[in-house]
Amino acid sequence: MFDNQLRCLLWNHSMEGLLNVKPDQAIGQRMENLDRLFSRPEIVDALTRATEGASSILEHETVTSEGHERCLEINSFPIFMAERKLGIAFIRDVTEQWLARKQAERQNFDLQIKVLQRTAALRQAERRLIAAINSASEGFAAFDWTGKLLFANEQIWAAAPVSLWCSEDMSLHVFLRCFAMCEGADLRLVKAQAPFEEIEYDLLVKKDTWHRLSLTKADGATIFVRLTDISGYKQAAKALESALERERETTNAYRSFVSMVSHQFRTPLAILDSSAQRILRRGSALTQDELATRVQKIRNAGTRLTRLVDSVLNAAKLDAGTIELNPASYDLTHLVMDICERQREVSSQADIRFDVPDNPVHVYCDGMLIEQVVVNLLSNAIKYSGTSPVVEIKIWMDGSRAYCSVRVWGIGIPANELPKIFERFYRASTASGIAGTGIGLNLAQRIMHLHGGEIHVESYEAAGSLFTFDLPIANADQAQQAA
Image: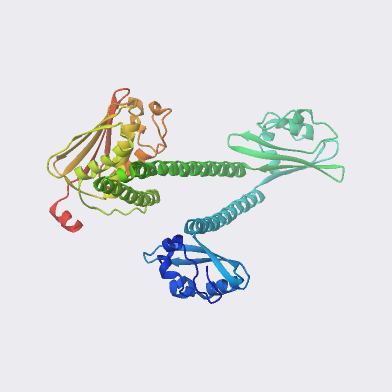
């Protein structure tokens, strides 16, 4: 709250949290001295008008000292106290809504561009189709009102089945009967008699050859027949239908991808929730060490969420073929065990066992991408192993390669389905009724291919599965380059 000289009269603790100014530092001071926000002309004007009886709402966009975008909403209202004209401002951090609105505007603009582009493409295809039909060789014939032939060009006589079934004394009745056996015809062609009705058919006259048969009347006496080869049109229509089907597949792929990303985000979010609940339940009973442990888990989960955002971008780049590897030297044992420890936070029922070397196993890889591989194999192992899963993790070296295997005694995969298990969207028949998208193993295999490695699988239905991947061991030169 402020007076007509814009001196602060009231400054609550929420303002302290928003602008980092304490109430005792604010009260009595001029507003422009409290924060640069209140020195902006439009905000000074809004506050001044509030003391004069006018309300206003403003949004102020800025960048924090950490480099993050932020948007504040300033609602200014007049208020009368003790016969004094004062002003009061309610300030909210609306960054989340503001960013969502900006994102929606960008997406709406992108959608409009795509609609225009696709509309233009469809119109261009339509123009090409019309031009192809207009330039095609057409059959043309004219009959009198009784069906007597007046004229027929060479294309009419050469068209199948006219060339097979009709003679030179062809009448309209005979001509129409020639096409009665074609696909797309009906009994009207057999029963056609004077006075003839106007008709139009798309007829398959022979394999891959379509004609459009049109019968129209002019001046009440002459009947015109037009026979147009529309094979190109039919093929184009089929191509458009195929393109539409591919578009549907792309849309389904996008939805599946979003579903997969949502699944990946659940793990760190569950860690955040469980740690926060623990702190709330224990409250002051928590020791300093316990509190530090829980806070560290929350921070680790936050870091994990940041990494997942990067992973989502990497998955999109992988699909676009623009992924960039950032290899460095990692201890594979530490990397895998750290992932397993995080998994235990949300899968406490899982018994994860290790068979790893005593010494570090240094590999040369992109740690963020390999983490995605391990998370996928581990989460799948737990998900498809019933209520008390036992997962065995083994790490070893052989020559210039390091190997990591994930074994689980679960539902397994039928032998005849193993060759398809890494195909996108493919899910084994034994996974029926268990949530999943069919994207994870495909993405993991493609990541391994980028590293020159491979995921191998051995599995037997109802007997469990063994997934193994390999990475190059980091040599001295690579370790130095990574450093």
